[in-house]
Image (tube, rainbow, N blue to C red):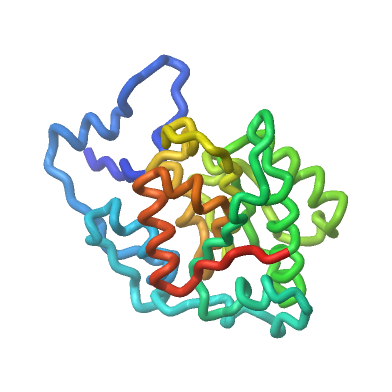
Length: 245
C-alpha cells in the first residue's frame, strides 16, 4: 500500500467531526519519504512555504527561474505607479500593504482590498496575462469579488478564476492574488487573523507558477508568527509595497 499526500496542506472536509486526518495518523506510525523536488513554481514562491517543510524542498531547474516575463505579451503601459512596481517581472512574490486604511467589515469583507485587487487584475490584463487565481479565506469576500469582477471586467472572456482558498487546493495558475481581508485592532493574534492557519497559507501562496501577490494589512497579519515570517520573506526579496492612493 502506497499512500501519497501533504500534511502541510488542508485535510479533506469531514462531516464526521474527525479531529485528525487518516493521512496524518499514518505519518505518525509508519516510515515516510519526503518528495523534495517540486515542478510548479519558482524559487521565490518556494521560499514562502519552504520553512514549513524544514527548508528541505527545492525547485526543479525547469521552473526555478520562471517569471511573468516569459508569458507577458507586452509591457505594462499604464500610469498607476503602484502597478508599475507590483507588476515588475523581477518581483515574483509581492506583499501589498493596505497600511490599515482599509478595515475589515462585518461578515469578513474588505472592500478596499477588492478595489486594489481589481486594479492589479487590470494591470495583468493590460500585459496580456489572464491565467489568474483570485483567492481569499472568506466566502463573503469571494462573493463580493464575483459581483465586482463580473460587473467591471470582461470576466467570461478570460481564464480568471475566483474562489476561497479551500476550493483551490490542488489547482494552479500562472499568477495568484490573495486577499487576506483581516484588518483590525485586536491584540490577540487568533482574533486578529482568524482561521488563516499554516496549511491554509501554504495552499494560498503555492497555487501560482510565476507570481504570488498577497494583499493585506501588514500590522494585523504580523501578529501571527507564520504570516510575519512570510512577510519577512517577501521583504528580503524586495517585494514589499505600501499601496499609495
